[in-house]
Image 1: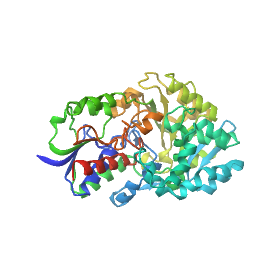
Image 2 (image 1 turned 180 degrees about the vertical axis):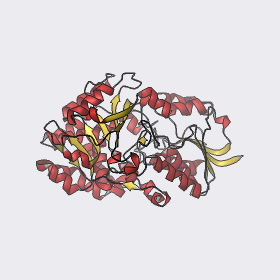
Image 3 (image 1 turned 90 degrees about the vertical axis):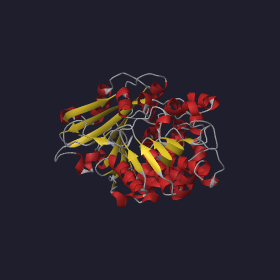
Image 4 (image 1 turned 135 degrees about the horizontal axis):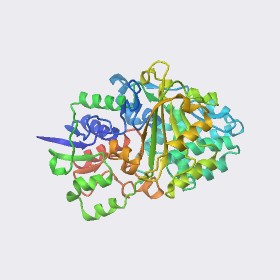
Length: 473
């Protein structure tokens, strides 16, 4: 059987690529090795019956703000976004918390004397989000459509997160908030361009908050599959691809995989020069993840944390920077920066009555075998004394287990590759069309292409547009 296109991998980017091809009239089939579609957008009962946990992605500022997702009207296909009262809380040792809200005014008021500085950094970018998204959520090697808007992100974003935080803010509270946002990059906070991640997370918060999907992140993937089906596309699960010759004949092949897996499957079709270039693509740090079934809410000292979907644990700017620097140097941090998700507080379908789920992870060196349970729980106890007494069950996954759940997460790298300055612009290679390969009919559509990690579908969308220009005209 032949088709216009075959997409390998059913993560959000693979499904998005398939949808864009199908809505342009091309026949497309998605093949997935696992029994369940979704890649990093899957949910399961990892601890006890009735407790629904997100296997990887949990909060979706980029998903709700994604121009491509917004064009699909996924709400009509069963996806319901839930927006917690606060996007983020960042507790400190004095028993208070800094908060980040969808409301720019509320956030600025909470930052006190730094409220005006926060506005200066993000207000214009929030106002011009559609223009910013056009230029920032795709290939960076191009002539921007809105250069003045992009400059408002790019010029301060060129700095390291620690330098920008110290220049822009006078209080340790605002500096800590920005450090936590920038740490999502998994870059050292003294690295150039790390500030750009903090800015983008701040902007998307004020555009779309940090919502969760009712019922679990799996619902995002389910809605994308429903959209694909409505356009005539098909998905085949439990179909492992070891060689491109195992696939049906097609005019184009799109891979929602890492460059390493692309080379393993289709290397015989690629030029030696291209294979050499993608061989230099570096994986990023890994993660160590814990999921909990709890006998009630986390006993946070700072009550604002109970209004927030996401909580950042790490203390001050310098503490967070030290943790991320340890990871970058191949060391396991003693006091890790921990990202915490409290989905069940706002989505009662996630846990039995009176019980709660908790989702938490920290960054570790790629492939680390160190059990981080004790260090993560020490940070939880630091800001929520008595946390241990609420634990009914826990599921722990280090980098090896993370990769077992999703083969794209090499060594526990959930971001599709290192976010160094070189790999931000050359992802996976330095090119005006980073989705195209040396073979005219083979394309890469994963988070190893621009704009990188996150549930937004933009990598898949841009790869599909490349395929339509070059192989499916």
